Image 1 (tube, rainbow, N blue to C red):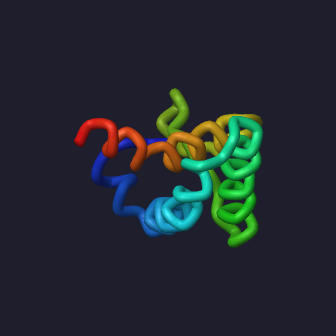
Image 2: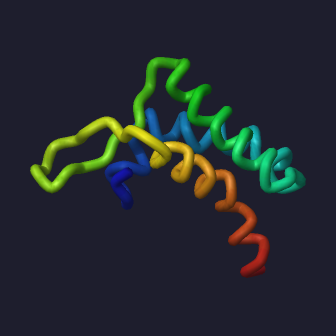
Length: 88
């Protein structure tokens, strides 16, 4: 879950953002319950392609995210365009 230039240019993160973009229109018009399902679908799509969600630990090493963290990150990515629209 790193932030900034290094993580933004990683091929896995580029793929993640591309997949999120495909689902955004659906996400924007979805109910709260559907949004949960859509973010879950994004996580499963990424994991199904053999990718993982990682975060840097306090030990300086990258560790796989377990639990609800990956879905929360997916929801954040699906909301990104909504924030930009509101600012324009």
